[in-house]
Length: 199
Image (cartoon, rainbow, N blue to C red; front, side, top):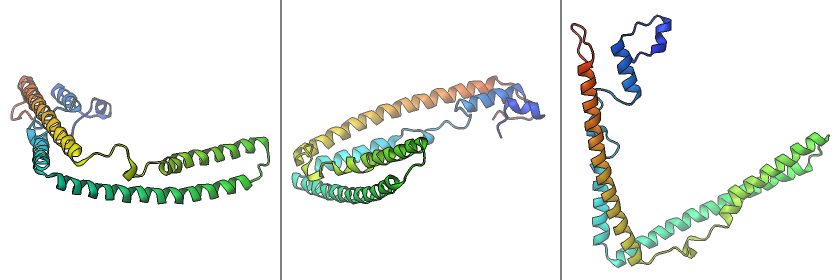
């Protein structure tokens, strides 16, 4: 368990070496933590987009059109589900609003409470219902692409992502190497008790 300088107050013994290593751990550094298997960016990201690029470059326009049709069906299903949910919520909010409206506040202070409750209901109707109800049906979206446009877009996107992850992986390798060197230098510089291994 990593010691903390605050533990000294409660009787914990702590060496200078332990304090320095505790600080290193809080900086995200650890003598055994540096290998590319733990990297944030790795070759799997590159491979994933290389495979996607090969897939889209090999697809025919007919295959792209079929994929777009399936995608549109899924979008329509999701759109319809959201519309139904918005209608259900509107009914509940409006019923709640009627109940609040029917309440007779006993004082001026209570009137303000009633107004705030009604305002909150209106906000939720706007947020959860109106925005959904006013959404454009997927089939009517002005941003729908032709099969060729979609293919070109996906090929371009995959190429960009491959270059992005290659650069990130290169940066990650450099970061891991620098961090590993830092910890090796740190461990070599710290005093070592008899029979103790620098860990």
